[in-house]
Amino acid sequence: MKATLERSLLQYGLILGALYQLYQCSFDVLTNASLNSIFINLIVTIFFVLLLSLTRLEKSLNLVALLLHISLLPAFAYFWHYNGGINGLVPFILCMYVGFIIATTNGIEKWVSISLYLVAIAVFIYFPFLLGANETHSLNLESKPIDYFIVALIITFFTIYLKSKYVYYRHEVDVRNSQLEHIAATLIHQNEELKSQQEKTKMINENLESLIQEHTRGIESKNRELAEYAFINAHMLRAPLSRILGLTSLMEMNDKSSNNQSEIQNIKTLANEMDLVVRKINEVLN
Image (cartoon, rainbow, N blue to C red; front, top):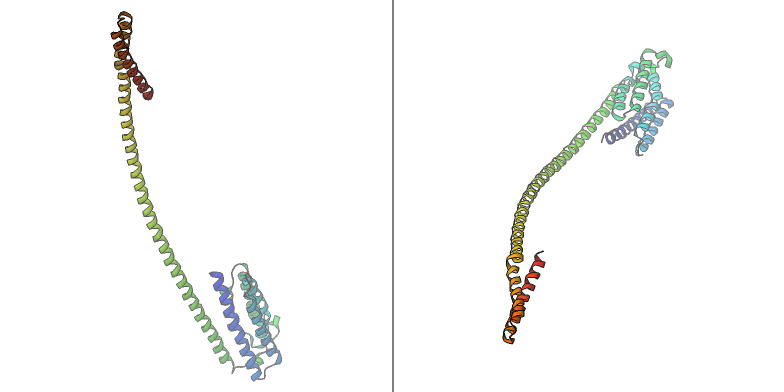
């Protein structure tokens, strides 16, 4: 967001600068100013337009801004020399331009540009002889109020643009904050639902454990009953069957009559069948 704001401010400043230089060219032509002044103002205008096209390139903001600030230093020196020095309009524009540097650059490019301009301003003010004697005859006192009015309009438009950008980005921040609040509320609601589901799962697990324990107790009880039944079946039921089978064997050996032999054989067969059933029950239980 910061890079986008700096890019838009740089583009807007280049547009205002190009318009101001066009105004200066037109004013110089109407007032029969020197060809050098007209030519320099026209070159600066074209330079602004070229830089404005370069700002559309990705990742070129700081380099374009640094190129702009360094390239304009000779122009400021020229206008300082030929337009009255400290008594002209250039000091006012220089102060405004330093603010423009701060608003449109960041990182090392910003500090390099500010340092260059502070050094240039100090040289212009305290060592004017390095530029030669200032030519105050080029200073048009009648146009000076108009120039100040134009510059004031530029500052006003730039301030309005800054305010609109501030309001726009403030609105964007408010929208994103509301979205984040909605997301946070959704997450809180989902967290509460998750806690509720966890509590339900915990209750189900606890009930499941109690059901398993109860079922386990029932199985153990059944196993004890089956063990008792197996014991009864093995000892209390098979013992009489064994005695019956033994008695039938003795009766077969001692009683040779055909009638008794048939009855004894029937008893023996029934006892063997019952013994077989008891054995199968024991096998299933074991």
